[in-house]
Amino acid sequence: GQQLNQSPQSMFIQEGEDVSMNCTSSSIFNTWLWYKQDPGEGPVLLIALYKAGELTSNGRLTAQFGITRKDSFLNISASIPSDVGIYFCAGPGSGSNYKLTFGKGTLLTVNP
Amino acid sequence: GAGVSQSPSNKVTEKGKDVELRCDPISGHTALYWYRQSLGQGLEFLIYFQGNSAPDKSGLPSDRFSAERTGGSVSTLTIQRTQQEDSAVYLCASSLGLVGEQFFGPGTRLTVL
Image (cartoon, rainbow over all chains, first blue to last red; front, side, top):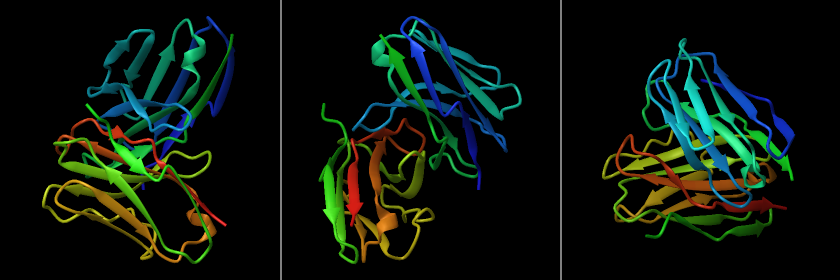
């Protein structure tokens, strides 16, 4: 089946720093989604990308849908302690609009 | 309005026992999904319900796993004869129709001893 390779697995940064994480796929995705999961909670959608080359921002978050449709990145600028959590990329698998495939996540720790 | 709720939040069981996990989707959402999240892993799709259509069970890992959705609302995920490898967080999500944003519940953490 389709797989999403997400990196890095974890990041430990100082408050105020910018951070970048990315996802690559062995096959084309038509939609890229970025979720954040806080401890003890379910993932919450941060940004959705629907078009190759699309660059979308949500506050301090910026995500891009790669031109090849096989990759995406998420940037967080001026990190704050509440950015701590696990960030997942996801997308609907081939032949399905609803069956999401998830990356293994990037654990972000922000040191105040 | 209320989000997706799941119960219990935590379940500890002995190997070989059956367990039932419950999901209450957001009112009016016709689509409901179950995912499994093992430690350090991303979410793994299990099953999908949409309205009165036959569910997509393609992600269920074995025939010990089954799910029902009664009245187009509440769903129950049942795991029979639990094994230690079933230990994980089971997450439920719902959405407005086929391609709407999936809203996740807080999950049920299952531990099989």
